[in-house]
Length: 411
Image 1: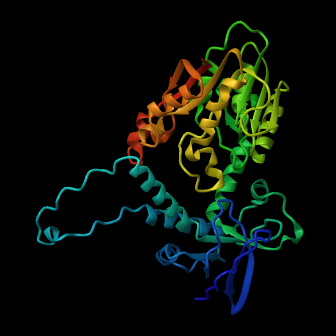
Image 2: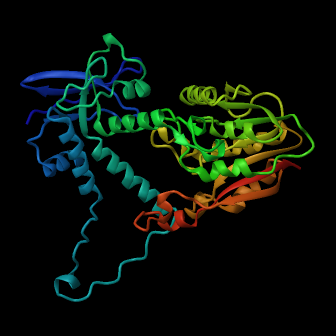
Image 3: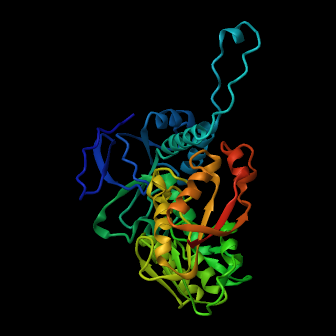
């Protein structure tokens, strides 16, 4: 079976290349990976004749499978690889087993946070294996495979506009399926009851790479929290606005006349501006910036990533906050940006506490050190499917999770 030679190291200014041999001829193409994966050093040509067992063995070895067969069969192959990757490993039989005697009881389940880190490692390995099925792209993002979908728009939303002189490229099929799924979310939108009942004006349309507001409990908390009294012309800040959903909900609260929403991610800025324009919120201004804009506000909302861990890819920055940098940045700067009588609304899940990644004592001490006091708290139970999925590796922590809106004021 033809294989590639190791790819040369690319300079930072040049795109990474993937190399392989096909029909006795050395070939190469641009390598694309939104998650920052390096191109496989070894690549073989694969098609409908390759068995799932062979593909799984090669993928586990780190060999890329450049697909030349039917596109839908490639999708089925990824599903077959997923079934093999998710199959529980068979425990090795000890001497007691071989003798027909009862095996010793298994050790108790790993204690968090070890279980969390093992889970992340397993998920990362699973992603690497499933990501070894590769598909080719033309310069215009067309896919030269039988029964391939027209994914040009989905790819353009993730990679940027196609360039005629870019030449062919190769990417993971699994990543492509993520683009297509994100494109459907963007096209259909996510209904947000807090923005109104029914119609096109209660939907948020997330862009690729921007966290989708599918967990409505934290949005409802912003819609329900009591607004500071005594002022009719309230100014609000939404820190790390993402899709702009919390800025929109805040703008609907009684007495709030203007909202400034900030983010430093170009995708989030474009997404928020598009959503707020579609929803008809001219009173919300979206600004590029890290955390706080200039000035002080009556209400400052922040929904930082909930887990203090290192992101494994760019799209994980909405989930993982390494060293709690955004959380601490918000807490430490909040008092200086609140108007007299104003409140900061910190939206945070306690999942990190159940995973052993952070303690409630640490959080309360961080608030106190920042010169803040807690004036109230609203709690909500999770509604997402994993909270009731007993087969999930982190089920115990997810089932106990509570999402809170902490009402904070300057001491």
